[in-house]
Image (cartoon, rainbow, N blue to C red; front, side):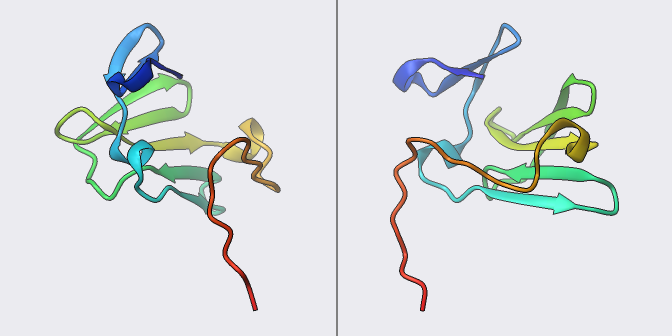
Length: 98
């Protein structure tokens, strides 16, 4: 996915789509379901109203306004390394753990 500047638009397989609210401050969560070997990346609190399969087993979910709100990946352990999540150059606030 390529993000086109401050416009909030992304280019997915040549189609311009609006990027969901999570890329503007909402919390993102990664939910793995071992019984189905699927990973759901939740990008927004908004409900999905439309879905589009962009490659085999990878589905993008959109809200009513066309914002990307989630990514569903089937057979996730065959497509991704699920043991470690690495973030690069993402401004995160450090929280102390006791």
